[in-house]
Amino acid sequence: MDRGDRSAFADLVDHFQRPLFGYLGRMGMHQGQAEEVAQETFLRAWQRIGDYDPRRAEFSTWLFTIARNLAINELTRASSHHEQAWSEHLPEVACEQGQPSQEAMTRQLRQQVQQALRKLPCDDRSALALAYYEELDMASIARVEGCTVGAIKVRLHRAKQRLRQLLENT
Image 1 (spheres, rainbow, N blue to C red):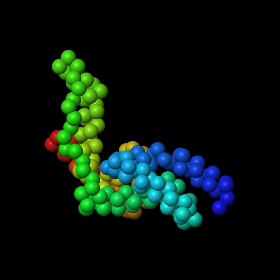
Image 2 (cartoon, helix red, strand yellow):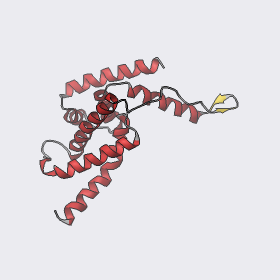
Image 3 (cartoon, one colour):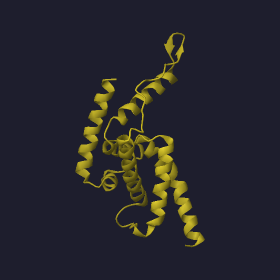
Image 4 (cartoon, rainbow, N blue to C red):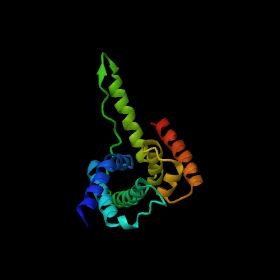
């Protein structure tokens, strides 16, 4: 392996590190888990770069597929060992002259959405994160998720309905 390969891969890591951390966070991982899974994702991508075929998918799709599989394995392992403890209590809302501040209300809403997302199955969280945060097209999401575009459309529709119900019951 030459310096050019290492340099090019370092550029890829720099380019995809932030989006990958964001995706893993939206999958319900805390920072330490997300860092470990991201590191393992980049390590596996480096080890298997010869398997990447640009005719089949963009590099980002291939990378997010690796991350998704590792994240689901980690989340499944963590939940089966009860290592992931999410608080069900929202913090106190800061008040200005007896009224909640806009910043506090926004923070509370963000926390409510995160809690609702964590109650969704991993597959639904992944599809929502890829569609609405990473802004991948349906074909790319289908490749990452390993299913058809039609299945992704149905999954996203159902996931949004579940999320809406969870938020209405908060």
